[in-house]
Length: 318
Image (cartoon, rainbow, N blue to C red; front, side, top):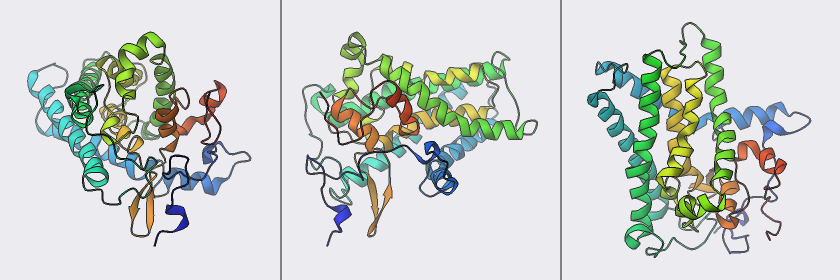
């Protein structure tokens, strides 16, 4: 028998978290250290498991490039193709796993699902007339190559002496702090880039493709117009200015490339036994539902509050 927390409690008949939405632990005043530590290092939390996974991917991919003898100071087809293939496999596996578990296998049915309806199998607004095929196409044929282009060019710029570099052995504290800071930088860049593509001329020609998904699912996350992919991954240009290492570069673009899977999964929790693995993506789900609110990331709710675009999950949207 379902517990009360599993039962529908939204106006659509689906599941919603405790409302209204509030600021994350980092922004509570007066400070609450225990909540901050749980928010940052708990499981699930900000860094575990996802940021830790992205960091592991970065270490592994950089290790593979070094093992293969790739000279990233020269733009050669061999190592660029290797990076592209690796990114395609990583993206297809990560997004595919989320989709298989929650939407193909439907392992937990609609338990913890925000919208109790399943995404439609056909739609005139989508490439091929099939939302799923369209989302996979735009993710893997546009998203991953552009993700790879930013990664390849930034690694090359570092190796060629164009972008500033540092080392873990020479500046371990700085390198660790930069790993910590990059998700927050992405949150800021995402907010302003996202607001920009909601400008009507760009929305109608570019961002409409992403918002065709009214009932988002994992593959929705990276399903964007190529112009939007160029904007979305452009945060990597920070590392042409700020000293970093190849690990930081791979970590950052991997974070940007994979995080949308969880952020668009459409479920508040992935059920594990009688409890659930919190996904904490209701903030962005409200953006897909109402379009003109919650442009940013839940890490930085004050940006939406500052610009009057914050939605707490209960107020009316005009």
